[in-house]
Image 1 (cartoon, helix red, strand yellow):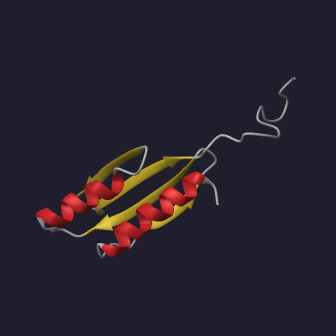
Image 2 (cartoon, rainbow, N blue to C red):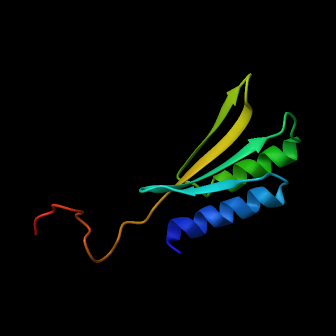
Length: 92
């Protein structure tokens, strides 16, 4: 598992321990973790949620009156150290 997957897995595990249901999704450049937040969270739980997303490279909160609140976090994938790091068409 790449380093980003380990960090995303750790983040998802911490959110699960707080009673949230995280979704982890792999993307070409990052791994995302999202979780729906209940309408009310205690101050202590909010602190723990913020401590958990501090593992991510970026995070935020999407809040709408129609869909509630979704916490999101993104962990960058590590760059490959060998192989075709330039991608297709890269001239050496």
